[in-house]
Each structure stands twice: as structure tokens, then as C-alpha cells.
Length: 192
Image 1 (cartoon, rainbow, N blue to C red):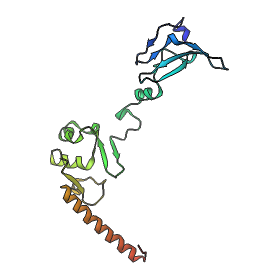
Image 2: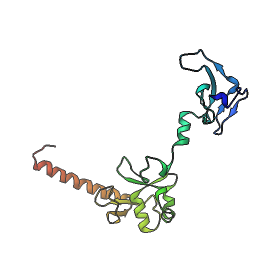
Image 3: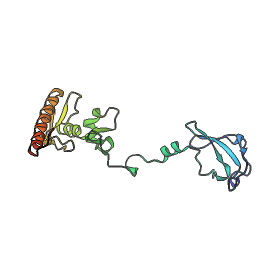
Image 4: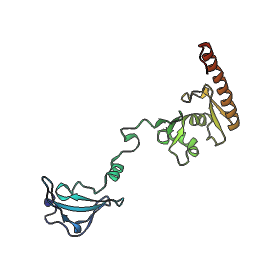
């Protein structure tokens, strides 16, 4: 198969279009097994990983010489072209919804660009508050969810507070919730 592209195997090493090196000078022959070719050529990927490829199964005109990891990076589409794209939204483990930088309009991005820093995502509640105020939020400005639902990011449910005010509000809410749960347990005769 490779002979039609290389009537004689080259003797010099060759670099593919992606930077991998095919070591033609190091071709070796392994003992022949059933249905397996025996001429092998070593290849070095751009990441430095070396492996041996059977020449008979190497259609050179299509082969890039990349390892599985590097070829996955090359062929995995990014952003909206990826099949797993969720519209630039994901929910963190702590329950907050995050929005991708790429899903914002140019006007929105201009307002909140300083809030991204090195990250590509921003919490939605902070984004909504910053867009409502028309400016970026500092680290010392917290956004509190009034009803306690972290996914309800309507501006009517958000309140801009200082870190100490936020801690106080959260503690008050937690105590009220604990009292409510104790009343339910007492009403059903469940000890705690």
C-alpha cells in the first residue's frame, strides 16, 4: 500500500505536516505473524512519545504521525462546534450556574471583562448584578440570593451586600430554616 507513494522506502527521517517525525532510517523487520505485516517504522509524536507503526497499515498520505492524545486535541472541536456544547452554561458542584465568556455579547463583555481574569466562566448571579449596575463588581461585593435558590438569578432575587452582611444574612436564614425543620419533626413526633 505504501509502495505506490514510496516505490522505495526513504532512508532519511521525515517530518509530517503536524511536526511528527517518521524515522525511515530505523525501519526494522519483526517476525511475521498471521495477517500482520512485518516491516515496522518508528514514529515520534510532537509530544515526544515514540511508538512503532506497521508500514503496511500506514497510508502515508492520510497519516499525521500523532499519538492518540495529540490527535484528540487536534480533532476535538472547541466551543459551539463541540457536540457536548451546552450553550456556554454549566452548574458548579456548589449549585451556582456559570456562564461562558464566549456566550456574552460584545457590550456585556465590555462591562464585565475585569471579572473574568484568567477564567473563561463567571457565576451568573454576579454577571446579572454587574449588568444591572452597569459596572464590574469587586471582590468585596457579594451577591446574595434573597430566596436562597442559587439558580434563581432574576435581579429581583439578588441583593448586593458586603462579605460581613452576607455572612450575617446567611446565618439568620440558616437559623430560621433550622427552626422550621424542627417544627416539622416535632409535629410528626420524630426525635432529633
